[in-house]
Amino acid sequence: MDFDRYDRIRPIRWMGDHLLLLDQRRLPFVVEDVRCDDSDAVAAAIHALVVRGAPAIGISAAWGAVLAARGVQAADGAEALAALGPALDRLNAARPTAVNLMWALARVRRALAAAGADWRAVLEAEALAIATEDLAANRRMGELGAALIAPGSGVLTHCNTGSLATAGFGTALGVIRAGVAAGRIDRVYASETRPWLQGARLTAWELLQDGIPATLIADGASAHLMKGGAVQWLIVGADRICANGDVANKIGTYAHAIAARHHGVKVMVVAPSSTVDMATARGEDIEIEMRDPAELLSVAGTRTVAEGVQAWNPVFDVTPAALVDAIVTEKGVVVHPDAAAMAACFGAV
Ligand code: MRU
Image 1 (spheres, protein in one colour):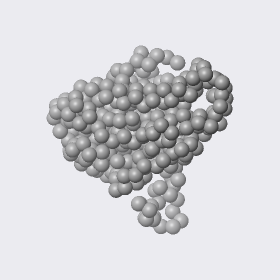
Image 2 (cartoon, rainbow, N blue to C red):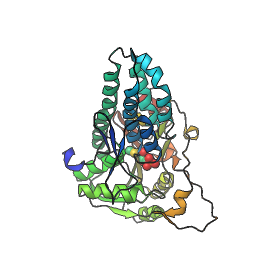
Image 3 (tube, rainbow, N blue to C red):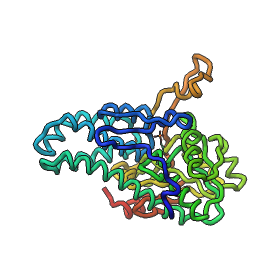
Image 4 (cartoon, rainbow, N blue to C red):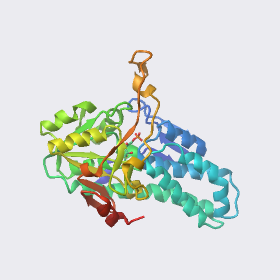
């Protein structure tokens, strides 16, 4: 397919001596970058959701490591790694659920440990490789996922899994882009994704940039939509996929998946292998990020809930593998995921 026709947004731009992150807190009405000159600024940006989406935070953290190295003098990679340790630990702790963050930093650590006097160039090359490989994986997953969709289908997606959440093209949204381009998808629905509105603010905006018609729904409307027969696939991304195929993703995914199973709608999870965590056996073992209850008590900065009301704000949930029909990665498609099917694709730990 003509990938460039469908993919113009780049949320992370390395400028040689600083990092520019498209500020996703302000989209769609303000399109502005946040400039990061050191690794702590990158960690703060990840925590504050300036940049978000599992692959995007991993890529940003890798560039954060490059920024952290600017003040370090070391004879080889091992010495540099020792000096960088605290900065890498702070990046690693910026958010807990998406394993791509820890995966990218582990990759950076491994590259440094093996590097000699040219460790600085090795580190920068590793960060670039993490970003480049992510874009290639997304394009491959787009083709693999679109091939599963029958012509004339309708799809529902949740949260934002597009160019904004990755190096480009997107995971679940990449499959939707490829499916539309291939003439297989006729209808695209995006759920708004309370409370941070990734679906309403980001996915709807991205699809508009591509000229792909999409219809926004309230999160609570998905079961009703499915009952009417308008969608054949729920297509979502992931923040961590366990060894048994359980999938952590944006809060609300689990409810959509339950509704999908009830109504005979198939569930496709699209994620690069950097999101697969074979060291975590099952969904119950994943740390679910809890964010400030204030995110639920206001809309666009205006308080909507009476003073004194409490809120509970987990921002991810776990969809059990049994509710997932296919996990699409760049390494292949795992149909009806379970521990055996996952091990066959990704190897046992
Ligand atoms: O809190 P966010 O916006 O970082 O959550 C993002 C999601 O849950 C995405 O679905 C997931 O990271 C996959 S992005 C390709």
